[in-house]
Length: 140
Image (cartoon, rainbow, N blue to C red; front, side):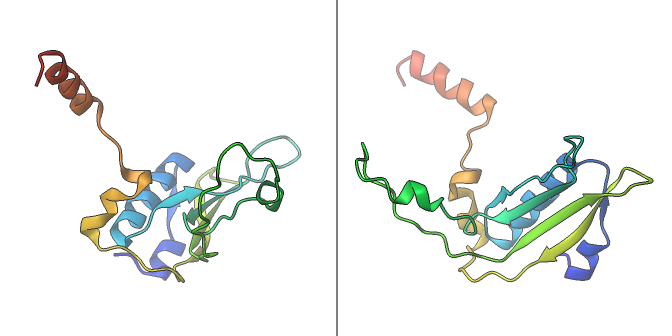
């Protein structure tokens, strides 16, 4: 596992590498990650990426106050977790570096054996999906 000082020294070639790194880091720690806001400059270029704990972001209040909803709202399970990582692009080298990193969670982290049950990581690979479809077609 990486320390805070090691992560703050990291540089990446592109934001996709950062996303893969933080996803692996979050799985190892026991939480699910999600992307936050992506502020842009005047030219429309993204200047910063934010990666957050999935327990951080709340629903907008205007959606909570709707009177005539067609279906019942889900329970809010967010707790404003402060864990996040922000990256910026270096001007000269065009590499992306970690400019801000917080690793303190105010929610419980999952043991490694339960992380695969988080909705973010509950995916079936293409190969397994094709295999299941072929078994279903023959009646198994």
